[in-house]
Length: 343
Ligand SMILES: NC(=O)C1=CN([C@@H]2O[C@H](COP(=O)(O)OP(=O)(O)OC[C@H]3O[C@@H](n4cnc5c(N)ncnc54)[C@H](O)[C@@H]3O)[C@@H](O)[C@H]2O)C=CC1
Ligand SMILES: O=C(CO)COP(=O)(O)O
Image (cartoon, rainbow, N blue to C red):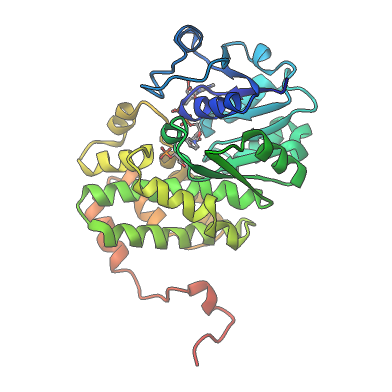
């Protein structure tokens, strides 16, 4: 029987492990907490992260990373970005040499500003051609209910992306392949910054025009940094770009949107993160993108304002005023350099 390991028993790891189990994979979920493993084994639930849902029968769980990884053909890393290097190091000794590997995290490593696939290949150089990233508009709470969902598997090698596609695809979870690993990772990570902004904007009562502006202008700056970092422009028009941006800015399930919304109510950042109790990747990603846009010399006005709100106590209304009153620009700034678009 085909067998898989999913490292990380939070909401997304549990949902992806459930999809694999439904698809006939013998799947083991690796959790850090003994109670989580006991609960999955005894009652088939993960109430802390996916309350109210019954997990598919047959899903295994363990706190032993060795037990989780031994003999597996497919390994998914689904822990928050800031823990990925530590988990990769723990996994290194036990990762089967032929296994297809994918990660589903949406962020950067803050100290190094590296993408997560770069972190994984630094720790596990032998997996470079066997590594994919899974991303796209996919809230765990809907995947576990089998709501129709589409995602993308991107890798350097087509065979790797197709292996991940074949493992996960089913009638409610449709997986596309994409050769642009860099763009898919960047789209999935940067959208969380804009989602924090959308939560703030909604909380301040700024309405739908403002949210459409955030989504659209947010996509422009995501694509701008992404292309400077080597991504393909068209990826940002796809599931890992506009698709994930729309779902995260508009869904009640989004932790990033909810965190932004709590900030608009006057809570301090630390209080918000305490209340959430789940990872809010957009906070660290705002810090990383703030540095990356300087490094790559690209303009990211929304990210810069959000950085000031999160880390310099800038009042959100002032940030919005500064965005609205900055210097006049053309919507298609990138098209304006080196060409003559006007008659
Ligand atoms: N929740 C969702 O709907 C989706 C989440 N993602 C991404 O998946 C990644 C994981 O997020 P979630 O599962 O949502 O997070 P979560 O907050 O629901 O759970 C995090 C999990 O990681 C575990 N963890 C934390 N530190 C760890 C460490 N050092 N070693 C091992 N395990 C550790 C926690 O115990 C917990 O089980 C994030 O990058 C997120 O952006 C991507 C798509 C959808
Ligand atoms: O990436 C996600 C959906 O595609 C999950 O977003 P949140 O982390 O904001 O909940």
